[in-house]
Image (cartoon, rainbow, N blue to C red; front, side, top):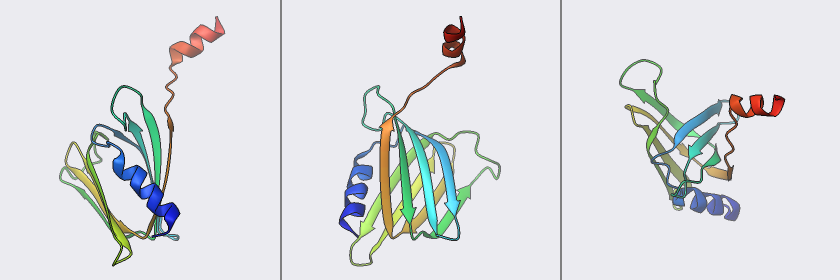
Length: 129
């Protein structure tokens, strides 16, 4: 794994995704890239962040949902990341609180995080008045 990917992997592995929510999911089949947007208190406490994780060289993509319907909750129960230097491949396993699961292998990873800002319609109404 390149140094930049290793740094991104270390930062992502330290995050607490267990009480977060999956905000977005994008799969680019042609480039074998999977991008996740995850929202929550990723470092504990009350401050919320929006993290974007981009996985490169994705293989072995597995999607499971015991309900057989589109998940009613995007609450994340667990997100495990591992990497094997000998195989030059990582594994990701994302499990939802309501039984859904995404799993895949990857060759590289990028990570970006920023403070999450929530704006409500009430804020817009106050600005208009």
